[in-house]
Structures are given as C-alpha cells and as structure tokens.
Image (tube, rainbow, N blue to C red):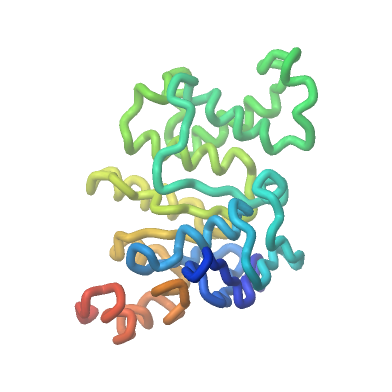
Length: 250
C-alpha cells in the first residue's frame, strides 16, 4: 500500500520543465531509489515533496491526503523529513543540541522556548540521545558538530532527520563526498532503517542503489523513463544509454 504517491507531478520554471508529469508510488516500509544523471530533476522532485517548491500541476498524496503546495514547515509536522546533498548542521552547537533542536521543531508549539531551559524537556533529550545511539554518535554527544569528520557529520544530518520521528524519510545523496569506508558505514546505517521507515533515496553511487533498493525509478530530463526492481533496471537498455553509460549489467 503506497504511503506516498505522485500523480503527473510537474514543475516548470518558465520554459524549463524540471519535473515532467511524474507518477510514482512508494510502498510503506520500502526503500525506493530515484536515480538519473545530473539535471534529471531529482532534487527538484524532492523539493516538491517537502514543500520547498509548489508544483505547477499534479498531485502529491501522502497517507491519503493531497499535500501538494503545503508549506515546508507544515510538511515536517505531517511526518516527512529530509537530508540534503550538502551537509546542513549547526557547526558551533554540540551534536546533541543539533538533534535536540530538530526534535523540538517537531513539537506542536514553540511557545516557551524563550524562557524555559532546554533541560526542561526531558522527553526531547531522551529522544535526541536515542537517535544518536541509532546512528552511532552517542559517545560524541557533547562534541561540537564542527569537530567531527565529514562522514560523522553526514551521520549527524541523518540523526537530525530522524529526530522528527518521520514516517517518510527522504535521503538526498547521503554518501556524497564519503570515502569508501565511510560509504560502507553509511550503507550499513541506512540498511538498519529499512522497514522501520519509508525511504526515498537519491544516490549517484549505483552499487549502493542496487544493493539497497526495493524499487528504482529512473529520471531523465524531468521524466521517469523506467521503474522496477534493481535487476530489471540493470537490464534496461534505455537506462544504460541515459545514465549507466551503456555498461551492460554483470
């Protein structure tokens, strides 16, 4: 049963159609990857799902509700969280405070933040520590975010997304800029989240996509040109021409 689906979702910037009539369904609890060359429209697609952009036309149905055009701050409260291509953290704050703020932002109201100490929210502190444990950073909770490695900062960004307790998790190139060892660690981490969250993944590292995905949608010039299981995508001649450089599957 799809948790989220799009119906002919389109975003045009003048004459440029960045997302062109994309119809896509993501089953609850699955990991669905969206791949394609640079400029294919993948990040614009994510921006539409998270309310950072309003669609030109089409629908986004999340848990049975059309959320197309809903502002991003309201999207978060519906249970949709996202990581970004570029690391997006507060470098001078501690690792724990970065995650605590994300958990706090998910609350129904911000009233009281100006006068109430952060330790007056024990449930949020507990949630933040649990998420840090989940991503392997609990032992560094007090360290400033700028003091940890790039790979650990990517783990922290994932923790920030998880702190909102989302139902739908959008991961935009979580392995971007990571070494081989860091990539393997990130892949292992994302694997632990499969089934517990519904995940849509954008990733350029094809071996990562093929090893983790339940289904894959391939975008090219704003349109979905193929969709299927990893083995089907590997065998698809049009996909190989558009994205995989004509390389035949092994």
